[in-house]
Length: 274
Image 1 (tube, rainbow, N blue to C red):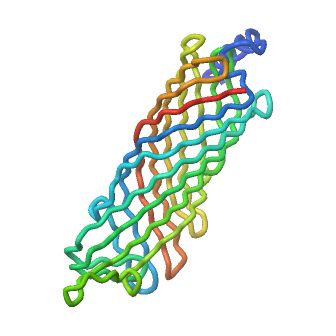
Image 2: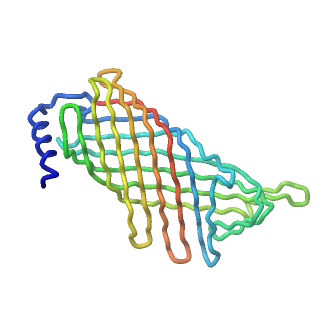
Image 3: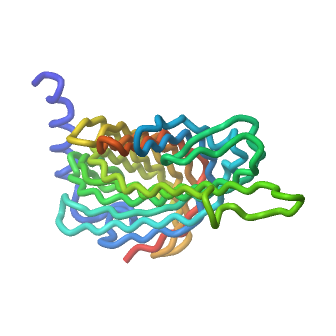
């Protein structure tokens, strides 16, 4: 209780000063952010089907390009004085090709040494969180909440080999394997905003989760730091850095999927509030 007392006094003072005025960003009921995310990924996957045990595959070692420039969208809706809904989405995709020097297996299919292996990975990420402001002032706010982060993993492996001096695409025959998994992960999230002046502000979001429920086992960490500059009454730009680490597995007996992926990189967004 003694630890909470200073925060309570600060909140009481902020409430007294809070009269609906303050930084423009905090007064907008709707805020839309859209832009680009330059990200680098480190990924290891394992897909097991049937009696053949799966092998952990590092996509970098399989020739997959681990950098990607993609879209990022975020929408915030303040539906009550202290409550808001945050929705966001982004995508990572990479592909590459390498000649195998050893046998590997993925999703119950063996790719022998000597074949040319093409690998494609796409990860769509969707966030839905409900936030509650535990502290607010005309130029700052702190919120906590939680929600659901949904990861849609899609991985495809295609094997090609030379037969009788003729290049044959065997991916249309035996050497093709695919894994598709949608992982809904609950999370706890915190948000902070601080206005340095009327135009420039700093904001940050952190999220985390670790759970083992039924066939799901996973952990999740998320960090997004941004500097936001208002360039008009309703429009601004935000430059940030984002880090995401997700380790999730799904065990369905004779079929299991494991994804251990880390994303990081800068983001640049245009913001519109109304």
